[in-house]
Length: 341
Ligand code: 13P
Ligand code: SF4
Image (tube, rainbow, N blue to C red):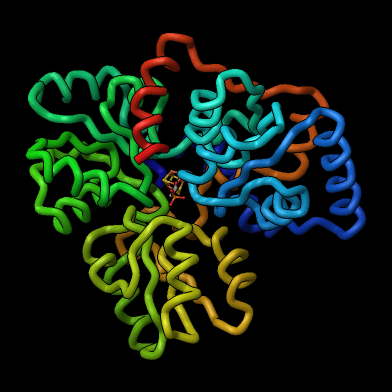
């Protein structure tokens, strides 16, 4: 994690985890009241990912916004009547909302929140990589910049990545996959498609370890294992269900276990527990012996969203998401394929 997360973000992230900041009831009540009033005044709606602060997720639910995986977040902005979208998550989620709803105003509580996959796939390097394989379809994960999406033929999220690649393979297409190598390897193994993989990974999911998970399974032999496919392949191989955040939440409801070990960002525990009050959830272990930092199953960028900066953003109408016109038009083509697949 130390290599790609900028020092000041990592420091703030570690401080937040140490402090384990909780709002006192009065502050929480006032913040929520103020944000609700601002949303009403400005015809705004909250769109939040399952990984953000539990209080943001609750407020989003209370105000009839959208708490979901990245695919549903992308679609929601197009269907709501609100003309102000406030996206709590990471930068690519705000950009996607803006590209798909260009006529709406899109704000984010912070513009610092990016993603290691996005950072790990700079447009110039990726363009050079694609130039080596002119006969291949370019399929990119949604966790990329607008520029990378503009270059791609297809954008996918982990909810539909398997199906899209299966479809392309059935059309005898050869594929360039970027940027997450673990998700790419998982899809390649499942579909046998002809894929060349870009080499990048998620700093959070990369830290789930096979040996640790195996030991934890031995401690809880009656627990099911739920894994996000950004995790390494040997971890995926231990799973009872592999899927996007929404697919993990569905699996927890549907699978016949009373306990689960969960390998994804722990922001998801709020929804898991809410949907399954009688089931028990455990965090999959991270940071094997070789890990550089004591990782925590918490995305350092998702953690930058807070009720405070959400309120400030609405008051000042700042942190506006803007995507240059030509890039937006080109990225819209591959994103439309994703939303209508
Ligand atoms: P989902 O599409 O499963 O919500 O995942 C987004 C993400 O960033 C996972 O790390
Ligand atoms: Fe990106 Fe990983 Fe954070 Fe998801 S959890 S936003 S893939 S760094």
